[in-house]
Structures are given as C-alpha cells and as structure tokens.
Amino acid sequence: MTTATAAKPSLFTRLSFGVGGAASGIKDNGFEYVLLFFYSNILGVDAGLVAVVLLIALIIDAVSDPVVGYWSDNLRTKYGRRHPFMYAALIPVAIAYFLTWNPPAGVSGNDLFLWLLATTIFVRLAFTFYEVPSTALAAELTQDYDARTSLMSLRYFFAWFGGLSIQILLFWVLLVPTPEIRIGVFNVAGWNTYGMIASACIFTAVLICAAGTHRHIPNLKAPPPARQLTLGLIFREIFETVSNRSFRALFLATLFGLVASGISATLNQYINTIFWGFDNQQIAKITAAVYISAVLALIIAPIIGKTFGKKRGAITIGVLAFSIAPMPVILRLLGLLPPNGSDELFNIIIAITIFDLALIIATQMLMGSMVADIVEDSQMQTGRRSEGIFFAGISFIRKLSQGAGVLTASAVLAVAGFAQGGGGAGASEESIRALGFGYAVSLLCAWTLMLVCVSFYKISRESHAENLRLLGEREASAAGPGPG
Image (cartoon, rainbow, N blue to C red; front, side, top):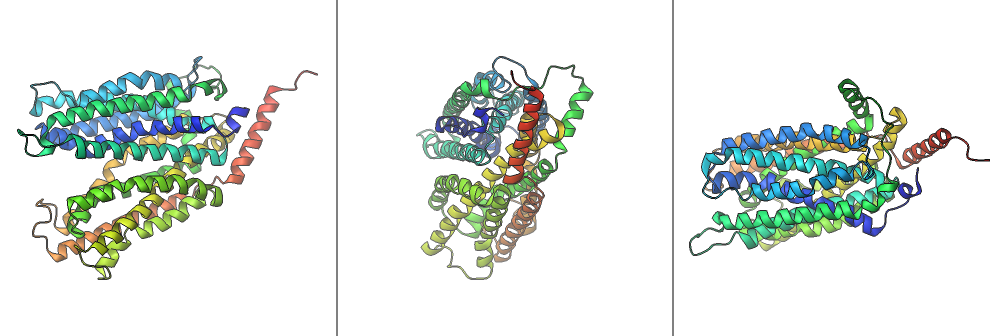
C-alpha cells in the first residue's frame, strides 16, 4: 500500500470529493421529483409517455453502471483510471441537463417525446461516466477505516445540501407568478432558468471533484496488468467480484432502504397535508429543516463509526431512526398527540423530523463507507481491486429499485381510498387512519428488512486492518527483495 492511500486525506481533498456529491443530488432531485410534473403538467406531454421515457432511460442507465465500473477499473492512461471519465463527462452532463429543461421553442405536447427521450438518456449516461468512477475514489484516496467514513459523509452531505438548495430555489424564487401567469408553477421561464442554474452548479461540482482530487492520480491504485479481455472473461470477473458476501448484504440492504425512501417520498405529502393538516408555510419550514438534519448527520456519522464501527453503528442508529420515524403516526392513531392545527403538534413533528432524518442520513453515510471497505476484502479473494464494480453495483440497484417504493406507496393509497385523486377533500376519518397505518407498517417492514441485510455484512475494523496487513505482505513479497 502506498503512503498516500494509507494516510488520511487533507481537508481540501475531502471537501473536493464531497462537493462532487452535489451534482448527483441536484440531478436526482430534478429527475425523481419534478421532471414528470414539468413535462406532463406544464408542457403537456401525456403522463404515460413521460413515464415510459423515464423507465427506458433508467434501464439503459442501470445497465451502463457495471460496464463503466469495470471499464474504469481496467483503464490504463497517464491520468489514471477514474479521472478521464470524470473529465469526459464534465461538459456533456451540464449541456444535457440544460437541454432537458429548455426544450425547443414552439414544440409542445407529445411532440416533445423524442426530445425528452434523447436528453434523459444523455443525462443519465453522462452521469454514469462521472458518478461511478468518482465515488470509486473513496476506496482509493485512503484505506483508513475512519477516513473513508469522513469522505462518504461529506459526499452524502453535499448531495442532500445541493438537491435541497436547488429545490428551494426553484419553488421559492424562480416559479413566481407574473401579470400573465397567475400560478407560479406554470411559469415556464422559471423552469428554463432552473435548468440553466442547475446545469451550471452540476458543472461546477463535477469540476471541483475532478480537479480537486487530480493531484492524487500518481498515488492512486494502478489497473491490473494488461491482458487479452474477452466478453466471457469480463462477465466472469464481474460476477466473481459481486459474489462477495458483504457486498451482497449491502446490495440487498440498499434495495430495501430505497423501497423505504420511495414510500416516504411518495406518502409524505399526503401525511403532511391530510394526516397532520399542515399548511404550505409549515411544510416549507419542514423542508428547510432538512439543512439542519444534514449538518447533524455530518457530525453524527463519523463519531458513531469511530465509536461503534460502521456495521454496528449503522444498525444501532438505524434501529433508533426507523423506530422514531413512524412513531408520531402511531401515537396519533392511539390519540396521544395534540390535535391538528395546534402549534404544539407542529413543534413536535418538526423536532422529530429533524432528529430522525439526521439519523437516517447518517445511516446512509455509514453504509456508503462500508462499500469502500469491501474492496480490500474482495482483493484478498480475487487478487483484483474492483472499486468501480462495487460502487457501480450499488448505483445499479439504486436505479432499478426506485419504483418499488412508489408502487408500495400506491398500494397504501389504494387501500386507504386515495387512489382516485381529489387530495384530502372529504377524506373520511377511516381513510385517514388507514393512510397512517399503511405508512407506518410499510416503512417499518422495509427498514427492518434493510437492517437484517446489513447484519450479514462481515467486515469490521479489525478484519479490515488484517486485510490491509496481508495485502501489504503480498505486495512486498511480489516486489521481491530490495537491493543489497
């Protein structure tokens, strides 16, 4: 192992790597929460066609992840394995994101189908070229157990911070009414400006990440020796790599964690407006409070990881977080909370939300860091370093499982009687209680399955240190005796 990768990265390096997460946070926020609304409700594309486009782009994107991951593990250039991909994605990803939100003038409705299809595929593929190699750097910039937690904590922090900031900018600043447009969300110029600002922020974040870590290229891990690669060999090595037991545990844990996230994201608007009866101003305060949660998580995750270890820490705060999240709903169903419309209820909910979301984000940070530690564990088994494959695998399951939580949430809404639209107008007490019960139970089930999967992760601080020791001895033996 080199001194550079064994040491803890400087603050500048950690921040450069972390800021790179803002690009993904901005893109994910736009694509997952408002792109469907923009093209269907504002530009008039049939919602079913938009859904088809998003599904096609998502599948192509997911399939590209292991390809780019394997490619970046084996690339041989004077600029290393990862940075050529990051620099190659820099301009295309910004241009593609801008074009997505700035379609040709005079084209509307279903005539935008091909434009949307082309730009969404372009954005997702360009992001794969950036995201997979850049996150793989977490396992190369350092082999220190705790320093990796710090790196991934900053990555997740800036992803949350960037995504939230752009969302607030869009809805609070850009989508404003005009004399001609009475309802702000129909201000197409505001959406166009959002595309310009978001793409500029994405460009800046990618550039900071690539340029800020560029000086480490000479000290990053070298690719495997040049060899004749066949399609069969490539897929055999990919499957051999991902058969690592700890990786399978995190792969499945990520799946169930994303199901929970999908349920929460889909049902939160119903819970806040119908179940709790909050108004727009109160919901805006809850949204802005996510800043506090992200800062708290940035503090909590490294401390918990250092004190308890990553696996034990993730399970401990995960159990706490996922017990707290549905608790207010359960207490309301039992009649143990102040009535809707009271300041006491809002203060209780926002305080619980801030603390609980901080724990959830901290759990994500620890699990992200756990991926990096699989690299050396796999290297002991296969003789290859496969950072790109492992981070691509997590990215792959993130993309393919996005819809599972939404489908589960839709089932909850159908059972509760909200599937036919109409918001909460005239909702019966029975429907509202069914909504709360379905929300609490579905979240608890998904999170429980996630933590059960995490429990099968086998790498500890001690085993990681042992892997580094044995790999160091293997490298020293391969190098042979030095000059006498």
